[in-house]
Image 1: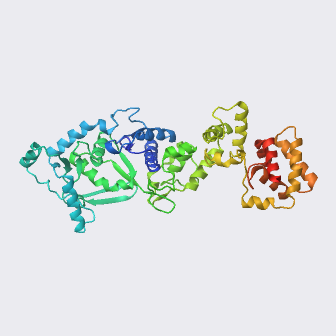
Image 2: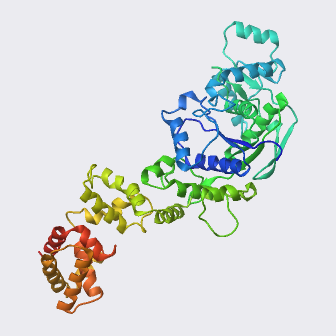
Image 3: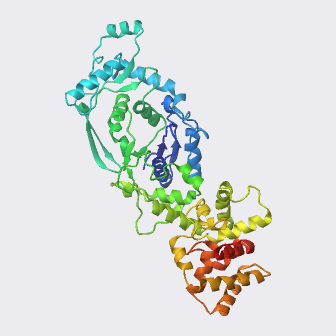
Length: 486
């Protein structure tokens, strides 16, 4: 490539970092780093009414958490600052004036009521996609001056060229073509002086020397409008690539109202997912490497990223795959790291105090260690370990079936005796106690272990039994045996 690769992720602070936005940012980042280029984060904050408090911080903080480091943005600056659109209004105003002077744009005085009436009239005639009817397109200079003198508010519209074909080679989809006759004259500056997206984005991309634009396919129809602006100023287009939709497991387009999928990065962070796992998962959401391997480091993704392997088909957000992948990463953590990931969730749930004694911390470490290889995300420890915090056990049908065995009262009576006689309450001591019950009663295998597991833990499956009973504690274990016997 002859010129430096410069790509951008340009979110609006109208919401928090969504999984779709995270994927867009990630693919731009990988492309830039693969080509030793620059990745820019630009904030498109012109939709003032919809901007939300914390939206901007969510975008930047969660990108950093994911490991998607940017080279230029509002917080670190850069040679093309400012990187926030509301701080670039003078640029948009100056260039809108140039478009007006050369006749590529014009002032439109149509009221919102008139525009709505025109849309309804077109719909009544069966027009599927109503466009502006051109009322103000041919106003004379005198008519425009008179309306301005009367104080009539106006927008600025692009004068769409007639009989022009807009075609480009999309980096994902291949050849794409649009006809200007299908696009009505569109607003580039609103009545309040704020530029619209399709106008401002072109000026930003040009002046920030953006070379490639990777974005979601919902932006595909915006491309010819943006090409008009590039053409009007005689500027070179960036290369465009439109990534396919993310769909849910029902193969429906992912909607922010779809409650079957957690959709914001901060929610995964709060649940105790690992950023490296999320990075890995997002990288495979619409892009595939060669071979069958699915676990890669960031450096490996950067080295092998090839835009030609971006999918042309919708990408399914597979929740099970994500939890499996996060589990693979958790397994590789040290116990100390897993404790740091999980312990705050036990504290938040009120199961452990905020300030732990050394003894409590050691107990919590042993507890979390039982589930190290099983855990799919940090907060899952609350559900996985619930048996250690219950004051009262409710047996399910499977547990009741185990306890219906005729040998159970004998096994449990012998086990209680062994527990009471233990001086040291360690996993080895508990294991020896169970062995002694086997010797005293003659029961072994499932007939021995299952009743002890169900009575002490309330569950038919779980971690290593002597370790679990040891963590339950001598008093609580005996109490659970007594309650069963009543």
